Amino acid sequence: MFSRKRAISLLCAACMLCSLIIMALPAPVYGASLSEQLEQARQEKEALENQIKAIRADKNKVLQQKKLLDQRNEALRNEVNLIQKQTDETQARIVELTAKEEQQYALFCRQVRAEEERGTESYWSVIFKSTDFSDLLARLDFVSEVMDYDRKVIADLQATRQQLTEDKAALEQQKAELVSAQAELQKDIDEADALIRDYEKSEAGHNALLNQAKQDEERIQELIRRQQQSGGSSDGYIWPSNNSHRISDSYGWRICPFHGREFHNGIDIDARRGTDVLASSSGTVIQSGWNGGYGISVMISHPDGITTLYAHMSTTYMSVGQKVSKGQTVGLVGNTGNSNGAHIHFTMYKGGSTVNPLDYLP
Image (tube, rainbow, N blue to C red; front, top):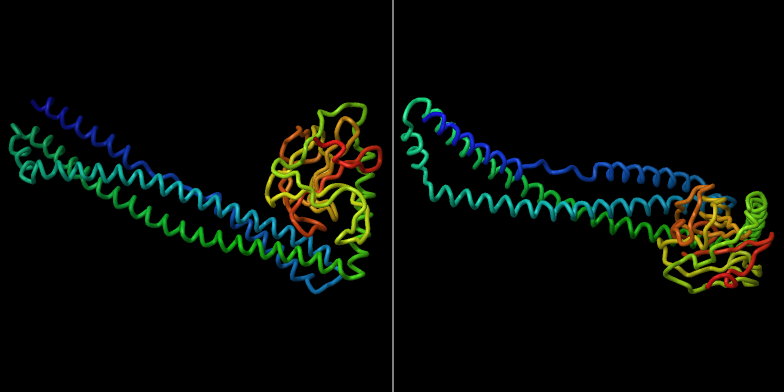
């Protein structure tokens, strides 16, 4: 008798334990690494802001200031992206916890109904029906396990609801931080744009920008001479943007907002900030990163002797020596360097000089 009833008791306890394990699995830890990344991004932004303050009054360091502003804006853009990820994770956790709460509440309701049907006296009847002392101990264990299980169901439900309350409050705070960071980013972008426009209006600024453009071109031509491929064939060329083919500034002579009358060595493609910049054709990366007045840029050497330049990006995903395929994302549209609005500056070099990209694009 004892063995059979003891086995039944243990079986019931095991079933309840399985339910407890399923319903009371520890909630996964979210966002720890994101919080660390966010703190790092904010520290980087603060360091750049301190550098900007140190040179803001020096009119001879405007181009250096513009570079620091671009870097700070990229750090702030990274901060915005991290806050957005935090918000997305919190929202996903709320959905998950809401589903868990519904399951726990359904289990709680089943337990309440079972208690109502069983009644308090049923515990006593279970105990009083014991046939001997060993059976009594087994029944007492069973009653204790049932009562512990009921308490655990209630505690789990309360813990889940508390976590939901905290997550919902955190979500509202993250949304507020996101709106604030986005507004700060737009203000800082406008500041960087205005800085370079105002600088160009002065004679000293105009000459400084013109000299930088000449130095940039000499450096780029030397880089091409050293690393340009030749003797092969390309797989054709495509537009470096998949969402815009609208040209805001054409190849050839123009009135430059920075240098006066000049020869524009590429085309400016109107594109939204943060959208992908695509490799126009397959090749090898020969430059990636800051590139003077071109800001953050990427240069790709192609087998047919042509080199393409993608300038003023907000960030680059490439490294020098990397092989890249046609249509692969090389970076994101931005406004770094001597630029007064988000766009893709796209130049093609061949035989030591520039060529009109429209002669090669479909």
